[in-house]
Image (tube, rainbow, N blue to C red; front, side, top):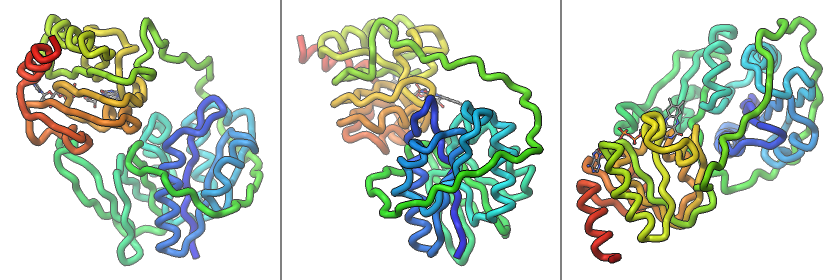
Length: 320
Ligand SMILES: Cc1cc2nc3c(=O)[nH]c(=O)nc-3n(C[C@H](O)[C@H](O)[C@H](O)COP(=O)(O)OP(=O)(O)OC[C@H]3O[C@@H](n4cnc5c(N)ncnc54)[C@H](O)[C@@H]3O)c2cc1C
């Protein structure tokens, strides 16, 4: 019987959603393969480890202060030591700022193959293969690994819905920090929350969201008028913020805000995973896009294939 590792992610004392998403997937794999699930908690405390007891058979807990705030160099060292000691079949990490930082270095250090940004994992004939998206999410590919003793996978946030809770009563094993860790080359200074700004899009019931499809900064007002008429709040994808057309606090997505409106109206947004990860908590998603193959239609409850301005004008007309 082997084991599957899940590297638990936390920030400021709270477990991140990706942790439960990975634990959920790892649980299903462990059941199919008769493996044990081992969660690795770096820099958390016992309360944090307690929260994932139900999901794991074993929790390896490093309470050390040096690991409390993320440091990819140190995490890589500690995780590679654990992989050597426990020889997990698969190690799951988030395709997040954590995983993107240390997973490639971990692959180099351990020599084990790595697949990044995976949206699903299958095991056939004792070897995992992963599902990844290409061409901006329009095509899914199945990628196989070369034969190895151990496999490393980073999981795209939002790929799994952790609806079923595990039934384990995981044992917490407190681990000591290796004595030969390198001196830190980075210093943690502090967390800076993206300010709520003048409005808090996370509290809105109706979000009218614009993407690059809006074309020009001047066109934003046309959509803002619609949002006002509907009693909604204007939000956007990242390019709109990058172009300085709207302040950062309007941005939805992994590097913006996760939102949970009752209705999310997406105008001219392609549906990149960094965007749709931020709307997984939304009620009804309505997307308007000129491209019938836009990935946003995969997550939309209703879709309109049209120029967004036709739809905006028609809605405004109706509302007036
Ligand atoms: C580390 C990292 C973090 C990121 N974080 C975020 C994040 O938090 N949020 C985020 O949104 N992105 C984020 N991104 C960027 C993300 O990958 C995409 O590039 C971005 O979401 C694309 O925005 P978009 O859909 O507005 O633009 P595009 O992908 O360019 O899509 C524009 C869409 O508009 C449609 N369109 C064009 N004209 C019209 C029209 N007249 N009518 C109707 N439809 C039209 C097109 O068919 C297209 O589908 C991040 C990227 C990285 C690397």
